[in-house]
Amino acid sequence: MRVLAHFVPGDKVLNFVAPEADWLDIRWCADDDSPESQATFYRELPHAQVIWHVLRPLSGTDLRRAPRLRLVHKLGAGVNTIDVETATKCGIAVANMPGANAPSVAEGTVLLMLAALRRLPALDRAVRRGSGWPADPELGETVRDIGGCTVGLVGYGNVAKRVGDIVTAMGATVLHTSTRDDGRPGWRRLPELLAVSDIVSLHLPLRADTVRLLDRDALARMKPDAVLVNTSRGAVVDEEALVAALRAGRLAAAGLDVFDAEPVAPDNPLLGLDNVVLTPHVTWYTADTMRRYLVEAVANCRRLRDGLPLANVVNQPTGC
Image (tube, rainbow, N blue to C red; front, side):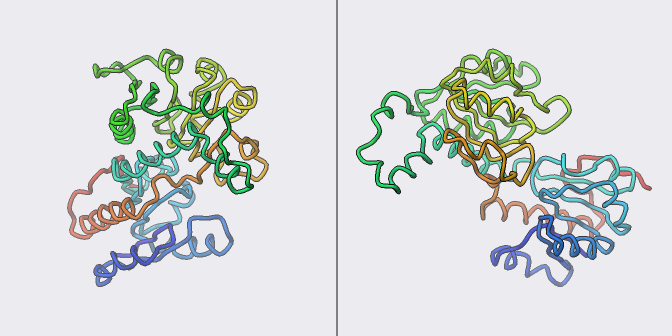
């Protein structure tokens, strides 16, 4: 079975898939826009029966250039980077891995909370330039413990629930919102959650109803000393409005792993703000998550080979 894996493997990945080499023919392609990667992708695409997809968008045009393709397996949960409608029409199953990256993303979310709340980048820079000792007296006026905060989770899926468990253990009060009142303790409507939370953490899929959900008006409801954390999708936040709020002191800080346009452009104003902690869409990217991904990806390929029902299919493929 020919697999086009849209990422560059490390030794642990290669060692994991090596025992399957007698039936799984994996071709690796970097997930970037370089001419070399693009050439590799389009050379391999017509022969691929399965694509292990990470983040590079898979357009309808791409899918139509893959006549042998039977499965696009998202390494992760969000399938917004795949043209699922075209895949369905062309008889291509699209599957994802709900919850597989939740432990890593949850820990990465709390990492960003702490780094933004405790002003970690600024303190690191101060120590490196020799001006960070003794500590800035403002720390005792502005820096807080997560355990003394109300943490508002926007969206309440696998990742958010894990984040809630972690910060609850740290002493935080946890609120959440979702598409409807789920009857769980701590549920709030979004406007109320934004108004009372010291930390707002976003855990939403990117859909038509979540694009720019955190717009200028929503950000204005937040406390001026609050922190916004986003490890879901960049377009859930109006970046221009976020920059304005951070510059004007209407929001204390932000921790961002995702952005409206990725990779981040060199002139993105977020890069010039001292009260923002940035990571390049990698909260999911750990050895532990990669192992969980590979276990599920290989298992679904085996099901496809053996004519068994696939796991976690999100569409009902028909045929071109």
